Image (cartoon, rainbow, N blue to C red; front, side, top):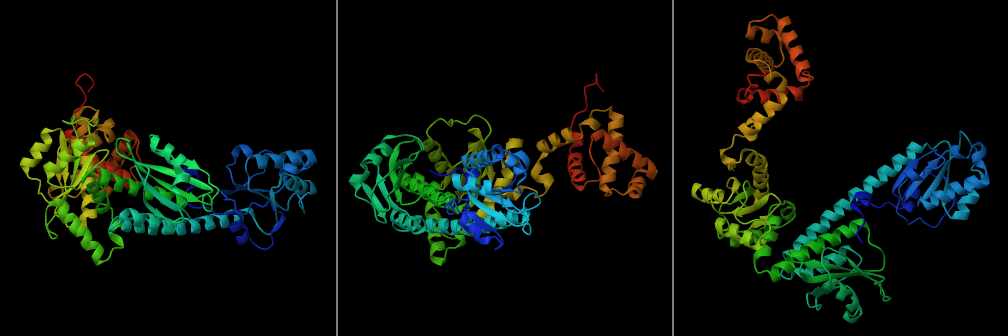
Length: 532
């Protein structure tokens, strides 16, 4: 039911919207009655058969070259238009000059016969102007939709934190999307509804399929009652794909990509809420963690909203509102004591117990947790015995959690590379500090390989010249003075190094990478004696 995000995106400009934006000099010679259809792109082409290169819903522009000479025969024109219709072209724009002073009658008749919208474009309106107009219209529409989508997601989040989250979530959904909504439990009974929902008996066929199936899916149905020409059901599933209920929506028209995106957000939040109800207190800890680690959940909240989150935070970490917290990320290094195929509940409970917090989120790299503990050396040693390493954040509070999360995340590559746990407040916040010795040695070995593979004497000499030259910001005179060489000799050796490394040493980015690599060059062993 949801359009492919890679092709549809969030924006949906119709042919009607585009035509209204065009200069008044353009004339519609035939209206195909498809003005409400989504327009994907505006594409000029003078090929006799452009259809292999077109996507559905394009506005094709031509100056008539395919119809010059024998191409203007009525049968060839008819075949051309028929191919466009078969390729789902939305409209044909015919530009006057340099080949025709009027749209050929054969083209007009073919568009009427095949019901393809035809627009006459005068010489004063270049094709590029039409493409630019469409791009601007598409961009403005996309920006508007993104703003609306952000507002909607914030409303859905507030509903989740309300006293009756499921009812408020459905109410927010039908307010933003033209649907009625019904939430049912695993037994098929209604738990919440919003809008004009048909009698439950009329939905039994769809509910039977929805609750009996497995895996991510959308079940569809068609009813003859108002607002129900399109009915679709989304399953709400546990982490083990057990059916916990379903969300059924009905609409009189197909949903737009943006509206489908809102529905997807609502389904995800309802699934978390249902898991909370059926899995004790495990799921709400994950939900709270996700909300607290993303700034949107705090951006629009008032004092009451922030205080509610502080209370939730305090209750989940066993602390007071004013207590300091830390973000901790766990990364698997060795085979963990409990494999990933084991119950995720067991893993979640293990981290909650060790870190004394309910705020744990299982991730693709391991886990993220918010804890009041300082994570001392004893606790760290226990975690590392299990085959894990930690990136440990500095002390913060509610409003600083998002920034603390970013700082900890920046340490994760270092932890994975070095195989050692790291603390934010013990790290030197420089490129060298974040890179670490192991990663720095790898960088040096790769970037400086042609130099490092030479005999020791030449290797040492060239590294000294490169280090001095970079240290003097590429100054020939300063480098020559530092090395006791003639400036021409320095220039010659730097040019030789540039050719040997196959790098443009005039680029600032190249110089920066080489400078950091040089800090670790002495850690890279030379070639075996047989090859030196």
